[in-house]
Length: 376
Ligand SMILES: Nc1ncnc2c1ncn2[C@@H]1O[C@H](COP(=O)(O)OP(=O)(O)OP(=O)(O)O)[C@@H](O)[C@H]1O
Image 1: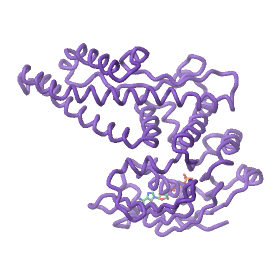
Image 2: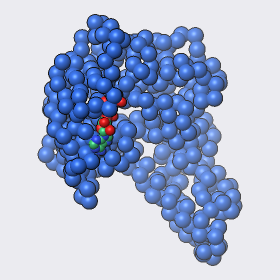
Image 3: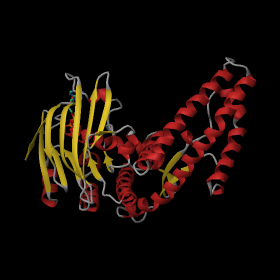
Image 4: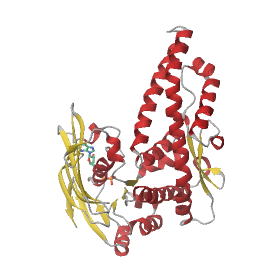
């Protein structure tokens, strides 16, 4: 897939920006705070319905505007075209159109437009809390399966209900027996959703790990990297759905007294972990900065090839400020692996490093100045 053109209105400091991209490498250059990352954020809205940087749509809405709009024209690998329009207005919320038809379920869009992003925030995936890694992998699975996104949303709703009941029992707001009855109403559905998510994550990691190890070995052939999926049930003894469900139901029942005492759900995929390791040691605790960088680049490459195979569609790739974050060697290697196959967008502040990079790669260069973009 390639993004041929984009039109951005009232988005961060871009009042009206129109860009025609190259189908290979697009280099977006400018000084600090000129609006380079904002272009990548706008692209992210077209594929993921949101920014990879901002937690709220209102944050990217231009300070002096009432609405923003991003319009992108894509071409899929089979030659078909698609137009995505995302708009947001204060008080009205976000609206998305695919080929002029309103998109009711955003999960559909996420699973249709494969994208891989490496940004300064990606460090959180390696070094942040378990939630950061769950987010990274949940998004990767969501990009392949819209059903997974819908199930995750439903799971979170049921989890909230369950927590409300447990909390009410713990605080004596309802009678114990009444609370247990209520819990039992929710629990079978809870077990069902939890088991589906766990099974999906298990299957995903068994497929993804090959892509990941292969990518890592391109940078380091000596180290043994690992991504371990850790869930509360014995995953090896949970081959099929019914067995997994049975195992899950069992630990849920076993945890009931503790859950009631604490007033919260203690068992379920919201507590899962994906542990990153190098040579058997946890990355988060023991890795050097260089190892963390290699891990992140390998994750990016692995995700690119995983999505490409699953979607039978080349993802686009966004690299935000990678020269500052990664160093030139890793960036060049990353681009020599994925940049020759797909379309990439890379932001950078102008420097000697960039000049050398431009000599090596065929790039279309754009200069950004106070939210205004010009072809270089
Ligand atoms: N909601 C908003 N409305 C208007 N301007 C905004 C809004 N949010 C951020 N800005 C400004 O828009 C610019 C966008 O910066 P952006 O993050 O795209 O910069 P950048 O060129 O990538 O810079 P750097 O190299 O420092 O990362 C900044 O000047 C920022 O202060």
